[in-house]
Length: 592
Figure 1 (cartoon, rainbow, N blue to C red):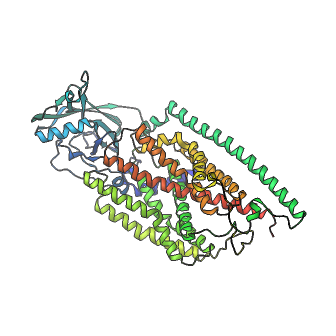
Figure 2: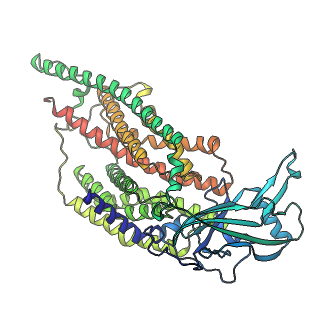
Figure 3: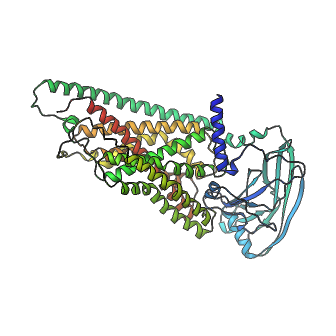
């Protein structure tokens, strides 16, 4: 246990150096009476459009004299966080009653801006001593009014903070609005507003180390856990039944094949071979577009490694709720550091396939995933800039990401490629490949690539679709997801099912004397990514209230990149499983 604790501490230490906002040791969270406690306003935006957020002072709030931007880590900027000093003054243990921030006359234009924000359910987010605060800007009175033109729009002008402390530490903060302190924004006319706030301090026994647990508990409630466990049990039962059924058939058929082929060898030698043994001279014939195939395999292997590391960090507790930008920073850093794996895998496999232009193969490997992702980012960042949203990355952040790519990702990719080229490994084919390929017999339509991909993707998707809703509600909503152990189990099930269904379909393809299984196994393995993108369409139109061009383009743009990553990763898993299976069955028989 001690060794495990040390390892966890090392991981946390490394992550904390990368993410300044992620530190939870509390070394600088002790206060004396009257000490100023850091309070930062973060962003505002429509509640149903999580990607469409704006700077807090883009709305005509009372602004403190000197608005100071908080220095942020890479992940916070990628997350769209833009923290600035807030107009409220909440000193430690200092109660305040109806303290006036400012008196302001809102112009007609400012009234229209606030009214539009209230109509779109705008919320605000702040951080007080690294604790999140949420609240709505106003409310729409629709009671008894059928016609939208009769709706009344109100802005909240009194914010009440309830702060809990334990000795010299801040433990919890809640913000609520005074329902009686409202400003009518319905008409286009100048309005006088007096923005007010109150603060009340209360003592609590909750330890400082446990102050973030309340945010985790929402996803660990018994009814949620029951659904998660039902999801896993449902997946396991489905998977066990189907894989058991397929395994029984496959093993029985293979056993019969082995007995039949052994009997045929003892019988007349001139008897014509049938089935998968018939194509033994073609099954290890290298695929078309082998440079692209090796690049896809390398990229998929890198993404699989990235997913594994992200799960390890999640399981040791790095991604706790409101650890601003931790996941984004981890994705960028780990992707950069694992690019050598993509270079090595792609170059080594390309050389095994007797490829000669390994430099072009490396360039293809480097651009296969990053290229589409970069084009998607360019388009979406342009949209965010047009909307003046916080999702638009500052020029400095783009330069930092470019430097990471130029100074870390690319050199490691090249080094991995050189190591792969020099590995001198040969492709282990248990049987010889003939000089000329056999003709593939005509096959029914359902044995073509697209129907096979549909069959291959459905089973793994059915094992994860219940859990997908919670992940989407967390990434594209405001639900908190912290049950990473369950998610990891679902991920393992996904890998097992993908490998198994791809092996089964590869066998049926070979049994039909179709020896072009290389690309087919990769496409069938990765087809689950296409099903996940199909689920995106269902989630957007049936399960969410997202709207507007910016949110729609962000959702479908970035989910296309995520599903493409799943396609490459699961395609690599499917091909590796099929390659292992094909080598095994052809090693088990004697082929002349």
